[in-house]
Image (cartoon, rainbow over the protein chains, first blue to last red):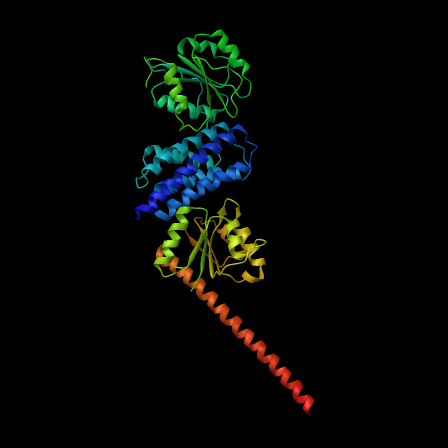
Length: 251
Length: 160
């Protein structure tokens, strides 16, 4: 196979995977934005087409299932948190496949492919469970409070990969009971910063990272409270800020 | 020299098809990434003049529209109503192909098609184009002869 075509495929696919990440996050925030679905579909279609031309069958087959799930959205189905999480996980898997495009599909890929096929056939996946209770001892714990399951999954993934325990919560309702286990808190503030500010006033010594989407909120940052803009999970700012705020944590 | 227009938003597809066409003897290719650019190339957009094209290889899904809708637009233009259009597809969806043919597609080729099939599809489309051009030229010649014959008859009547 012509190496330059393979390089072109990887470069082009990575661009489309970034678009898929961003598009899925935007659609999960506002599932009524049907116009986003076409862009997602086109990105998947381009990756599949390239894989097809180059005979990269593992990627072609996997993307086919991914595209079939998007086809349901294109035909009018709304994106649910479970499906958003499945698609985001699939984008992550595609990055691995594109990194080594000639490799055969491994067990993880085949299992995820089967879940995509089930979803395309109409089976609604369960959303990832909240509040994972099995913490690993001796690893610092971060409390992650974020209403969007997709954003939460995207934020938790690199933290876990770096060695943090992550307790995921969708709001502040039960947050206080987890603070004794946590060395830092990450909380979304773009819709209403008040609950986060009230929570932090009760936990003045807990390092906090307040995440926002478009414009930074009018909250002064300090040594213990940092503001971080939400970005793709590939952006390392959030992880680096957590590592900065939690001394002795995994670097 | 045959002119081939490639319309595809994927850089990889444009590069691979351009090279494949070059390898099988069609060096005169032009590749565009959107329907807007294709419209400009064909002179369908206001204020643009069309450039020569003998076959168009067209992707179905493009960021600025559907390739099948574009076929309908091209077919409405008297200048291109018989331009061979080959849909480039990675689907086996029979309904999608049927709709494309109804819209005026001449043929289709899968993205995974090998060189032999790809060459055959493009060559057939070009032969079709050349045969049609030959028929048109003959038709023009016949019409001219009919006009000349009619004029001769008028002259004959006037003389007798």
